[in-house]
Image (tube, rainbow, N blue to C red; front, top):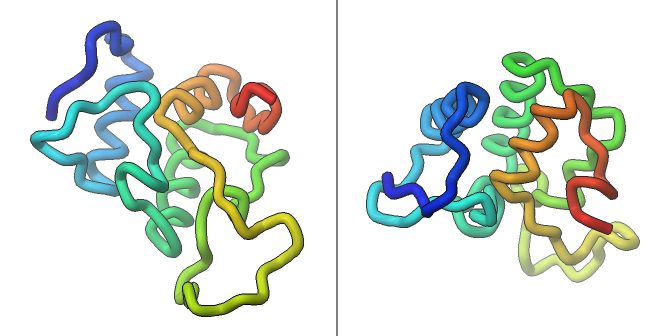
Length: 117
């Protein structure tokens, strides 16, 4: 795995990257940066996404009170041919490695802060 220049080199990031590698299998030849998205770049979705977020909560003690999985991921068994979608939940938002890293540091999922709204 190639890490981008200026990628954080601290214990928290090492633990996060280890978890991502175990849960998602990080690509060997792609450069990973803070802007790498879990959902689009790494293809995490459905049950894999749910399992990853549960592992983050368990390992790092993040309070996911403000977290909405449908904002970032399609549910398991999502049929792309379906035209009916929940209101406001059609287009997915990038969920980046930096967002996970910042959530770990804050010990809380704050959507507005993490997405820079």
